[in-house]
Every structure is written in C-alpha cells, then in structure tokens.
Image 1 (cartoon, rainbow over the protein chains, first blue to last red):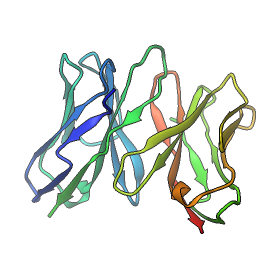
Image 2: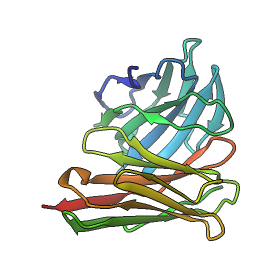
Image 3: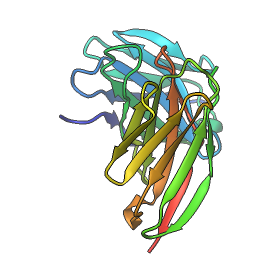
Length: 114
Length: 111
C-alpha cells in the first residue's frame, strides 16, 4: 500500500500571501489530521477531518483552515501568512475503526515564509 | 486537556547500550500510547504502540511499558545501533482520537 503523500514538499512564500497544502491518505483511511511542527513548539495539532467533517480542532487562529473531499484527500489553507507560520506541516491518516486508531504520517510540507 | 511530558530531551548512548525514554500524561481517559521515530527530513514513523489494557509490549529490540496508575509509559531500546539515532516522540490519545505529543527526545548512538 502506498503511504501518505503530501504536496508540495517545499514551499516558499512571502508575508501576507496564502498557501494551500495537499494530503492524500493511505487508501481506505478516512481520517486525516494536520499538525504543525516547529523546533520550539514541537508537534501541534491543527485539525482532524473524518468523512468530510471536521471532528477536532486545535488552538490555532482562523487563518488556518482545512477541508476533506469525498475521496478522503484533504487540503489545508493558511491565509495572510506570517513569519511565524514557517514550519513543517505534517498530515497523518488513520482508518479509524473505533474511538482511537493508529496514525500514519506523511513526509510533510516544509513552508518557509519570508 | 491532556498534557504529555517527555524526558530526556537529548540522550547519547554508546552503540550496544540501552536507551530509555520516559513520558507522563495527565488525562486518565487516555487509552492509546504510540511511539514515533522521526529521521531528518522525514515524517514521524510509528515504531511501537500500546493500549491501556496491556502493561508491556515488545518488538525485537524495542519495548514499551505502561503504568496506568502512575500515568507514565516508557520506550526501551536495547542493543542500540547507529541507525537508531533520530528524534523519538511519545503520544497519548484519548477516546476522542485526539493525539497529544511529547516534546521529543533526540537520541544519538555513538559508534
């Protein structure tokens, strides 16, 4: 089975711009979660989508949004980029057969905001 | 919400020695505890996990122990090899499937 794929792998933007990141989960997985990883803050949960609905949301401003499509692929969008948004954005998918399930991570998208 | 603490933040061991990383959690509703290994330039990879109805789990050189009463769990790597060098993250998950990660341990295995 192919793993979680994320595109693009690297992205450079300037302050004020917006960006859209894409995640394709493992085939058959219906839950997709997004995380922001920075050296100072570690792995921080952004949001989780299951069957096109946002199930959980982390403590991030409204500039961060996401969505999930009927084929379980997900996108996250960051508007009005700030320097502090520079980070590795990770997507993880899980099958979610019960209340909890193993998450499998993609390689991440490295976003640099200049 | 859940709070996961992980120690130590850095760990250096000689090749062949054992490495132990410890995590504590605060939410007694957490019932699933995976460990991830992250190598440079890659996403975290699941290496072992344990559920709250089990006290210990082993997979070759890697083992995880869970003490529900004390709310702590540990990763044990025996006979360490240079390729074990990476950042390791613990996580605690509650019934809402929300993942809370520790801050990571950078493990260096010295040949």
